[in-house]
Length: 200
Length: 200
Image (cartoon, rainbow over all chains, first blue to last red; front, side, top):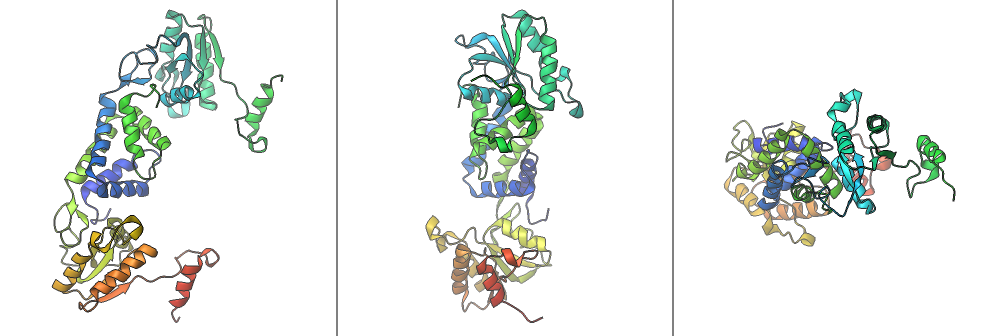
């Protein structure tokens, strides 16, 4: 960049640019915004970043991100501990929590099997899930990986690992998204919706 | 937010959300990205934020953001010190530098006159610009505020303040943007392009 930009400014622009979905233009807009904004805003952001890793860890039971171990969900006696939803990422836990209808526990796999990206089953928390089922009183594992190639491959693998371990293994239903329009739904989704049709 | 999100995570999501153009969804995507990314990335970003304000200041001559005072542009003897481009923001300096054809100095006004937002002439570095013209050997001030209501009002005000101070006051040309299509150009721009037509 030109010498019109001082080095501390360049460094922040570069740091912002390294985040996903933030290009050099957005990065410099954010940086120049912070230069004009009150110091407190910049320091709050810097503080929050520094505490993000130092104050959090993975729950030793479900591998969700947490401050206490085990996490509030795993240690909640009112939840159904015989039910485990296996998800790819911590954000998927939030998505299921937002439905307000799931009261079981979770298991965060931390990714999906993806040969292209060199991610195999051993890179995920699958062994730990199997161990929870073997050691615990688990009745059902809901495999809630993303619909798609990698999520499906992961689901298949998890299902095979859990065979004969005493828990029922289920998957989330496939079908039409609520509010979607039949005309614009892709063929695969429509096919799944047909296959999964239920009596009225 | 639900108790599924630990407090340090919530705090960073909120800090990111306070930036312009970053909504809660993007903020949580960025946060969860950082949780998975190497620690170094998060710390680099935190560091860059902390240094942004502590290591930079405004140039006492042109009010651009700088590490040394006066800034590298103001202290560059090879540039034409009799020419000043008055711009609204530091990012506008970069835009003009990118053209590679301007070798004068700058004056960052730090905003535009905007009665709606309660920004008057005294909130901008206009008095300091007039002083530079009065005290220095300035031949021309190019008012390079943004085309639009507020930029135009600011340009008019600056022009009036500089009347009789010995420097020529000019504005950037208005007209068709290069690569633009006549069909899609707005009426005001086209009108300006007509008014400013030149012989071939």
